[in-house]
Amino acid sequence: MAAVKAAIGDAVLTSLWVFSLPCRGVLSSMAVRFLGVQGLSLPRLFITTIVTSVFVLTFNVAGSAMGGASLNPATTISSYATGHKPKWSLLFMAVRFPAQAAGAVGGAKAILQFIPTQYKHMIKGPALKVDLHTGAGAVVFDFLEIF
Image 1: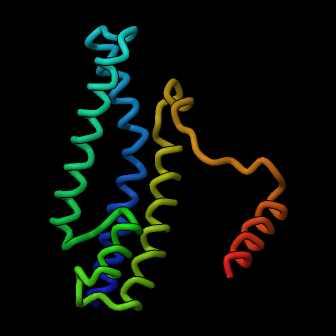
Image 2: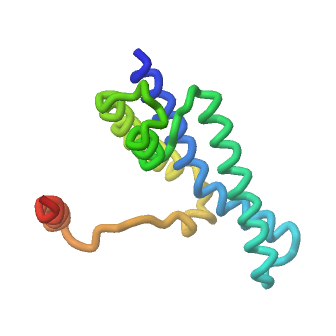
Image 3: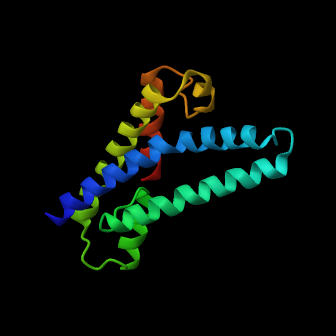
């Protein structure tokens, strides 16, 4: 039961994080325009840093309030590997990782529906430059090369 509860918290928090990440850029852009510092790079960097810091702090507090939910799989695995959370098992991790991935997909799909048209150019991400079968084959062969 604890693993399912943690997985739901991870999925929700990851979904909200992925959804709000493009909003960070839009919010920074709106603040720069409001303050009239479009041509100055240092104030733009300062504003973006403040907005990002507020987002990170907010999500850390929300994760703690959700019983230790995490939006980053690296954080989850490092806590497990170091023994920081002794009650976690490998099965616990196996439930949390897919939940985080599903939350990320849900957040990405949601932001594509809700972001205003004038800010769609700000959403960037990885793109496959070959057909799907070639890309999948490259991933599989790369994975097999590790072993």
